[in-house]
Image (tube, rainbow, N blue to C red; front, side, top):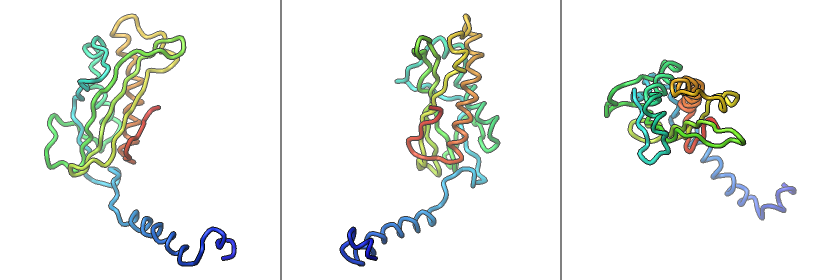
Length: 183
């Protein structure tokens, strides 16, 4: 106790400072888990993502590459607990709402690199239990040599889509707020 006397004026101060810590730890163990991995209910995801109307979307890539359907398909292929649906029922337990925020080229040093960003939130019984922004680019070694045609470029997005899907699945297993994925 002599070591603590310089920091605390009395033993009642020590008890008062430890009490909130004990309550917090107890509450963490009593709160129900929010991980989708612990649930038998599937995570429902729309089979076609929407494009954010205020997002930075390259129109030719949007029109040619079909990322709105390729991204959710990649997520569902990698996680058997994710189900793609045309319409999400109102009584669904877990829902992943996602939208494509960005498809654009940006300078990375002396190269131009395509970037895809998806934002989303996970809901459990209608309440948000986590949200994320996932950002990926095709392989950095191929970034400056993207195809001369849009078909070639769309094919290169497979790398980014796979990585985005893996990042989002990791988020579903451990949802949190303000998650920055793939950065």
